[in-house]
Amino acid sequence: MKTTISHIKADIGSLPGHSSVYGPVVEAVENYVKDHSKGILSDYRISHVGDDIQITMIHTLGIDNSEVHGIAWEAFKAGTALAKKVGLYGAGQDLLKDAFSGNIKGMGPGVAEMEITPRKSEPFIVYMMDKTEPGAFNFPIYKMFADPFNTPGLVIDPNMHEGFIFEVWDIMKAKRLFLSTPENVYDLLAMIGSKSKYVIKRVYTKPTHEKLPDENVAVISTDKLSFIAGEYVGKDDPAGIVRLQSGLPAAGESLEAFSYPFLVSGWMRGSFNGPLMPVGMKDAKMTRFDGPPRVVALGFVLKDGLLAGPVDMFDDPAFDGARKTAVNIVDYMRRMGPFEPHRLPDEDMEYTTLPKVLEKLQDNFEEIDQPKKKEKLKVATRDMD
Ligand code: F6R
Ligand code: MG
Ligand code: MG
Image (cartoon, rainbow, N blue to C red; front, side, top):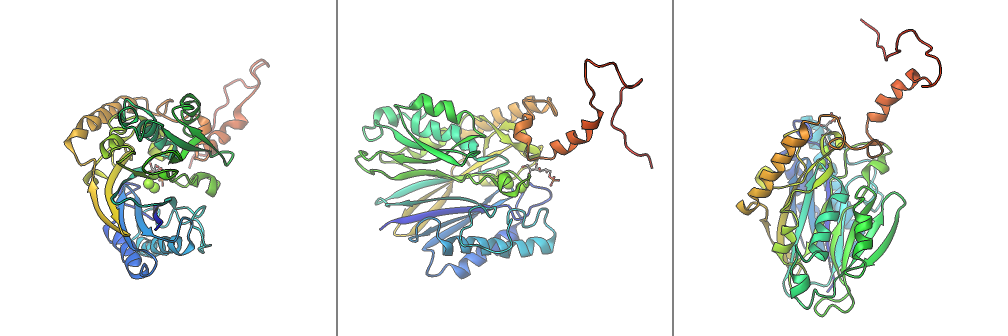
C-alpha cells in the first residue's frame, strides 16, 4: 500500500533570540499531535533544530492532504499559544495566516512530503537545517545522487548505474523542469549552482530502476517564506527526506555529502554566508553569530506504517573534522564584518531591512559630473535630543 511521509516544520518562537526551541512548547506541539492523530496518522515523531519545531508524520492519505496539514497547523497553533504566554521571541512568527485554508503550503511552515511504495525495509533520513535556505540542499543532494566521488554506488551498484532524475524549481518564476543524470549533469550543475534561484525539489528513480522504478526518493521543502510574506520574516530554514539503500545512496553515502562544510546563505539576519555545520541533537542550537548554519540528520526505518528510530546520525566523532573545519571557516569569515562575500549581495537581501537603510540615503546623492552643489559633502543627519 502507498504510504506518505509528511515532514512539516515551523518557527513558532524561541529563546533567547532565534537560537533554540523551548522544551514545554515542543511538548505542547507533541501533545496536540498525540491527541488528534488517531485515525489519520499511523505514526509520528517531533524533533527540532535551532528555533524550528519539526513534525514527521506517516499516513496513507497522500501529499497535500488537508487533515494531515491541519494537524500540523493546529499543533503549531497550540504551541504558539504557550510561546506567547511565556514570551518566547518571535512567538508564532511562521504562522502567517489566521485561519487554516486546507493546505499548509503558502501559510508559513515548510513542507517536505513524498508518497512512496514502501520496501520490506524502508530506511530514510530526515535532514533539518537552520539559518539557511532551501538551496542549501542543492550541493549535498547533487553529491548523493549524481557524484560518484561521494557515492561510489553510482559506479559500483548496477541498480544505481543508470542515474536519477532531478526535479528543479525556478523559485523566482514558479516553474520547474526535470533533468536526467548522468546525461544532463552539466545542465543540472549550470542551474543548481545558483542556489537562491534554482532549487532541487525532488529526486526520482528512472522507470528502468530494477528494484524501485519511477519512485520519489528525495524531497526538499522549498517554500519561499520571504516571498510569501512580502518582506523578510525569517529565512525558510529547509528540511529534506532522503530514502536509502538497495539501489539508492547508502546511509553513509548520503551523510558523506555533509562531511565538507560547504557555504550556504541565511546566517545572521538572513543576510550572511557561512559554512553548514553537521551536528548531533545536543548541538542543535544556534549561538555564535546566531549560528553557524547547522544540519541535523535523523535516521529511521518504516514498516507497516510504523517508525523505528530516530538515530542521531551526525552525533559521531567521525564528523568532528567537518565541525572543526566549519569553526575555522567561521573564524576566517567573521573578520569580514559587513563586507561581501561574507554578507550576501544586495539582490539576495531584497527582503531584509537593508533597502530601508539605503532608502534614507537616496536624497543625499547628486550627479558625479555636475559642479558640486554643496560646500560640504551632504551626509545623512539625525536630530539631536
Ligand atoms: C537568521 C535569524 C537571526 C535574526 C537576528 C535578528 O535567520 O533568524 O539571525 O535575523 O537575530 O533578529 P531580530 O530582527 O528579530 O532582532
Ligand atoms: Mg527563526
Ligand atoms: Mg529557524
